Image 1 (tube, one colour):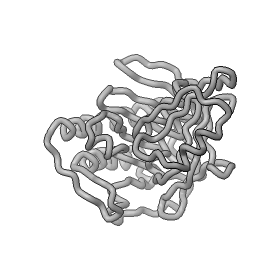
Image 2: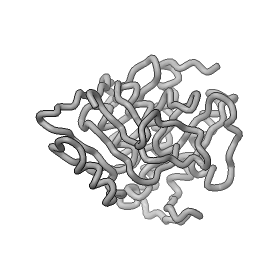
Image 3: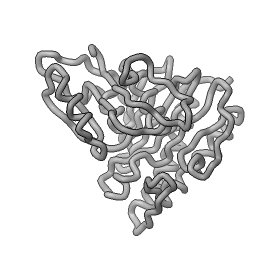
Image 4: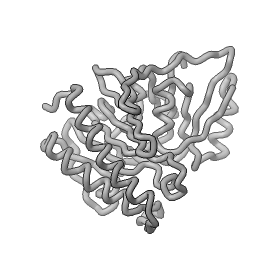
Length: 258
């Protein structure tokens, strides 16, 4: 069985950077935007990044199937009835990528028993990694410097900092935020960066009341939980994977003390 250790996480960091390099090549050019069957956008960057990641994961652990966003869109869905599988979003935040606002990431998560146990989130424009794994903790790598990640404890007196999607701010989400005891600040960010800001203690709670897919959330959940936070189903209970069509329900990401 694949061992979850620093060597594995370093290899995942390395392939995320390679994927990020080709993403930036496209980002800095005039690129075309295509539409998928579900109406969501896709670019050359999504496809090229996935083509880099999948062979490396097959080399690292040929026995572990990989579920990747663009492959699934093309109808390539391996058998995941075993205990473990990868979830890959080669370019999370394609809408942000198209807007050229920098809020896009590369995500690789490893699922065991329907729960993320390891993950890497990479933001190419700032060359920043958020890494987390069961038994190893969580850390950020930026400018060659590694920093331990730990969620912060919420301050009920000073108030909560809420982070939410910059592309999916619904009336239902606004009602949920209004129902919280005291909100000091509200931040909008794209892609899986919202998980990362919870993990590093910049924000306290991230409610997602809107559609996501499992590859959007697996890596971020692994990082948050390794940093001491939690991800719960909106109706309560653990947030699980290996769902029909890989579609997520609503969820809430929490830092400490919530």
